[in-house]
Image (tube, rainbow, N blue to C red; front, side, top):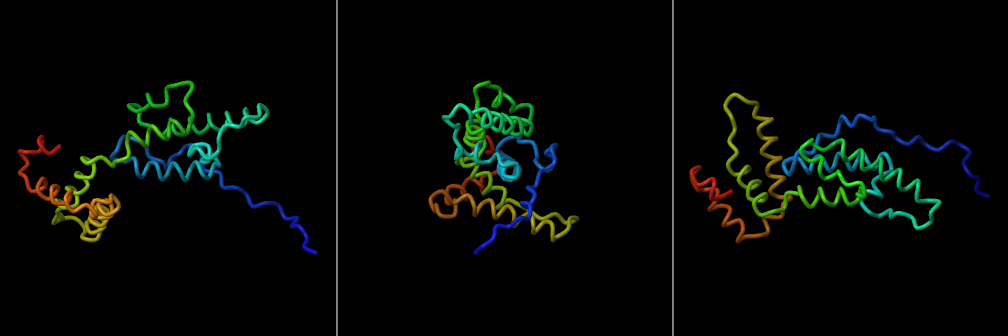
Length: 178
């Protein structure tokens, strides 16, 4: 016969309440790092399933209060990591954490053609500085390449051709490009 373990369950990691490891979301420029760190934080607090929409509000009245409290906690956590200029996204009283997360993703994920072009341009115009550490500069260039590669742009030869042309334009054409 198999005996049930009598040892207590392993403790659940409880992150600090100040969210110091999660940067404030300021826009498309830091959405990716913000969303990954905040998602990990919400997973640790066991709130991610509500935020990502896999745990829906229960239909049984007895279970709704607990879900509403957890959803409100998630909204609060997300809202406290938003730059003051972005707080309007969390202003609605009827908002759910899933709706807030979805809105922020739709608004700030850098998948537009301009965002892709700017990633491309940052990588292909990156220049190492004489006075800085070569290791840190190569690391930065590697990070920029990862952004380009992860964007999916390398599979679009027509887009690459246009981006190459736009990158070659002199700085006086910046308004035309952006």
